[in-house]
Length: 270
Length: 270
DNA sequence: TGATTAAATTGATAAATATCAAGTTTATAA
DNA sequence: TTATAAACTTGATATTTATCAATTTAATCA
Image 1 (cartoon, each protein chain N blue to C red):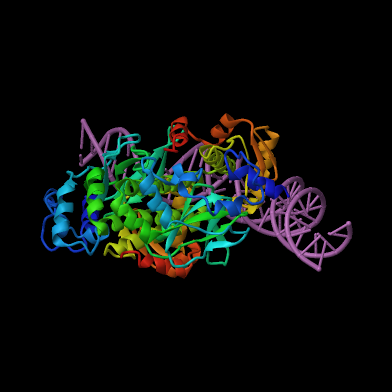
Image 2: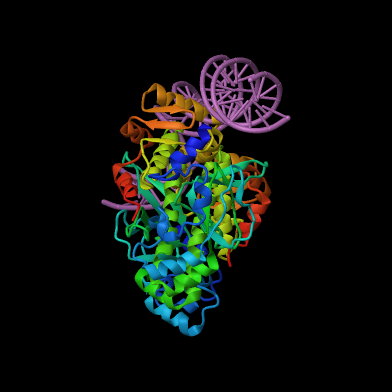
């Protein structure tokens, strides 16, 4: 029940009409130029005609249910994916049969870029909630990029951004204390919501505490305790997955984020 | 003294002639097709004529001395760089005026891919020893990629590999214990040497314990103790920067690396 | 709906790692 | 070369975090 609300909250920046149940099905017919996320994945300078060409190669898959896989480890790479709504996690298997969470993917973010090199997916992608994605067959994209310089440029830019983001996260994981990690994580999520036009001070986390802990290299109990501590200190309100950030500066202090870096990432969207 | 030997050891997979002192100066004149690393940065299917075009846009900088910067944080992005010989570290500044090491770069590896998106370098790059690099002006590269499909493809592949590698490192940093991190780190370095035709069981680390500790999110003392422990257990010999890996399986065990993943990365080169 | 399972929290204890403080070795420069 | 500085190592202690165990709360399903 509240999960459904969560979905809606996160799905579209502004929802004018009442499309609650059928929005996902309708979404499968929406073209690139109408996609509210298109400035995140397309060159802004691309013109109508070229946009149509791009639109033609994109397949809109039907929505994934929670825990459905978008792709599995070792699966053949054919396409990259853009999250339209919902969210996913990517993870790799480890020796002891555990999973190691490698990332979370919000609307407008790409998946599969790490698979181009080897032609197969080095990690699996699983939906954290009801999620819809666009599928972009890579061969077609490459061919199209060959004839559209701005598309080639945008592709390289997006891949660069992915590299940049990964390095940001390495900085995050390199941090020593548990509270610095969790704080940096929450600020990162907050920023990504902001870039998508959602509130940066109040949002729902679609991933479990377990996933967060795994991702941050901590024990679940530690993550839980940190949430409690942040609340006691009044810098956040957290009721399960619903998070309100009260004191962003305090969090930045804890995370050890320098304003320079923060400003840079704030202007990430174009 | 031994530093010079280190350089030579690492510099060329097979050195036929005695070029010891002048090798770096000579290197500045070597063309792409003669570069022993070219299969790492160029499409193997590129033909002689095209190779020349690529060769024309590449500038060979004169060698960096130890501690020289290749670029600084916030510096304007114009080119990507390929390490020809030597090595560098990249790092970002943190709030408290410290540096956070984000990566090490060995011969054949690229630098600057994370700067394309924003047009400026999010981290600084500093030579760990005498180091020479090729500079590839990005605008020219993009234009050339526009007319050479295989080059575009290779560029995308390389960027994908960078993303993949970063995620591998995130796995590394996500590991909980100090010994798992250090072991995974050494195995990663070992593998990268192997891919470049050097010994994977014996090599010199060009970075300090401090850099390693910083990179792995550990205290220097802890790293030092882990080196000692690994030696006591006989799985490595370490005399300062000179490392011999005696028991690779034990290290993989400690690092928690699954063979699957290891096999995959082993075939990374091409 | 209630029963069952999963997720999250909290507490107590053990283990790992950071920190502080020397001391040693190696590198650098006068 | 010797003097000085830097890098590395080692030990003792304090802090942090993981682990184990129990409980509470929320989610799922018959």
